[in-house]
Image 1 (cartoon, helix red, strand yellow):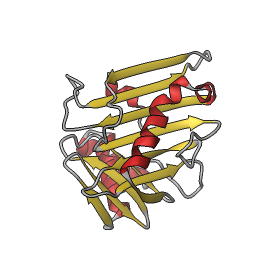
Image 2 (cartoon, rainbow, N blue to C red):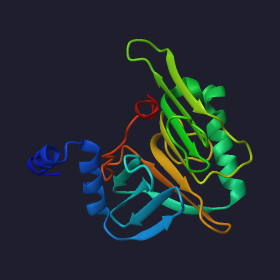
Image 3 (cartoon, rainbow, N blue to C red):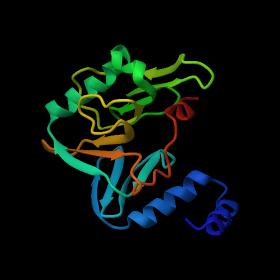
Length: 201
């Protein structure tokens, strides 16, 4: 990314997230699009991103390698349940950071209705785990969207990475989209990763 271009855009726009979002969208370009009433996802050979329809600042994307697959309701619910239970398993001792954000329907950040948001992170000066939780999980109920971000020594069942992010969008019908973006590859640029705790405050 051209640093002079970025500075010019920041001065004109006033916000790094909006500038980076525009940059990622431009680089991803046109591609396969999947959407529902909550979110829009675009995939191309250059990368991928998602954005929320009613909350433009809820955006994330990556330039470079990623995987995507279509999964059924059963597999989606099993993955979500594994991710929800992760903080209560031994794997949590190997986790540096873990975020799970689940959206069941349209929502607002004041009431936390229709969402479940969890974030944990190891303290910088100690090994203590700092946790934030908002909303409620709905076991057995397929969400319209969820995302996970993980920094760990090993991967939980259902994810292909130890460091990375994944997001899911429910489509009409029986097949739903799961995108996984491993970090650490020299071909991946995660320009918009933000800790979920930033969104929770």
